[in-house]
Image 1 (cartoon, one colour):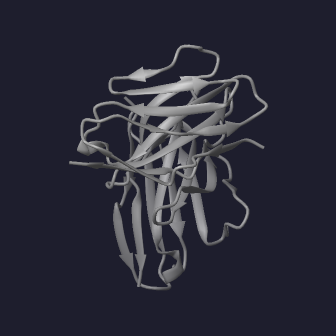
Image 2 (cartoon, chains in turn purple, orange):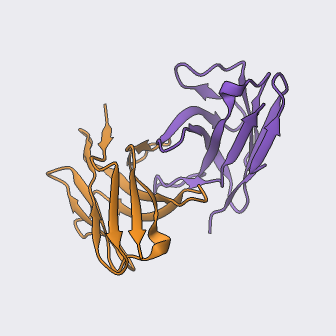
Length: 117
Length: 115
């Protein structure tokens, strides 16, 4: 199989603090991971593409200094929401593609619910 | 630019009956993949079924099957013998073959299976 694990599943933090969300591919190497934000009853909004060993590529309108992405290994990417504010409260999802995969399929983490007080 | 359109924001079906979710897409590519993903209330996205554009045969996975019409750029999902556990958001998605980029998602269809 191909399992992607995301942690934590839920996090509550105070305004102004930073929160780190981890995305791990448990049984495969992922050269590319993607981070999304999802609003209630909406589709996934791509925030950035995370490439192992290089800087992430951010979508237009996403603040790279606020949403720090690190893809330090072939199995781990992290999203850090810096100086979080209530408007950052959302559901964040990661996905990963198997290195060398030609099927196009993405495997998704369980998602992380962030609540900023 | 490639786009994916799901024209049904919400649908409902009685348990044990059959329902079809619509999806159309726009692309100038000839080789690509199409997917249906399911997002249940638990929120984890799960792959339901995948279709390779160069294969004429429609993909099937147990109670799930697709009607892939390449010329019409249509990719509908049929769920037979609907079960309560099928209640979820369903997203249609597209990617060009060989692309390592993100999938292009439709806006989703919320399916409710009623007992």
